[in-house]
Image (tube, rainbow over all chains, first blue to last red; front, side):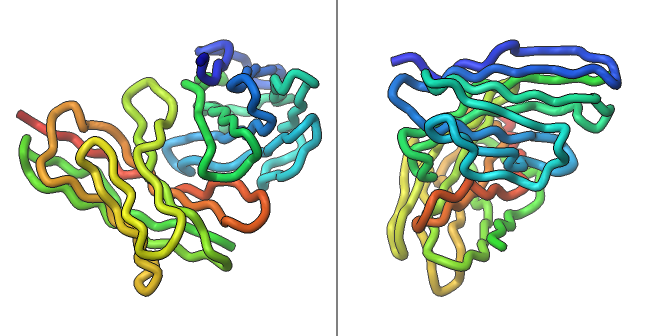
Length: 113
Length: 113
């Protein structure tokens, strides 16, 4: 069974640009969550989507947004990039959003220059 | 809100040494507890979990016991190997409702031959 697939693996963007990251969950999983990982702040929850609806949201500015499609694939978008947005962005899927079922992807490494 | 505190690293051990990584938590309800491991350049992998008080999670020689009275979930391994070198994250998720995983800051373990 395929795991959680995140694309691209690496990305370099310039300040002020916008970026879209993609996550394909495990087949049958309806919940997709996004986390930002930085050396200073550790792993911080961005948002969770379940059946195309945002169900939980972390404490991030409105520049961070996401969506989920009917096939459960999810995208997150960051607009007006700042240097501080440089991070590893991890996606996790689960059948129902309960903590015990999460499977993480390998992440997208975003570097803002 | 919920939080997880784990010992600061890095931790450096010789091969076959005993490992303990401390983790304590604060939660409003009755959480499930997890240990995740992150190898260089990879996402997070679930190492073990426990869903209620006094449960012991175990995997690959690692163990952790859910201690409600001390709100702890310390990770232990009797004899570490070089291949155990990684970053270890303690995490919780409330069992009631759909709440995201809350992570500790992570502990980097280096095992030298």
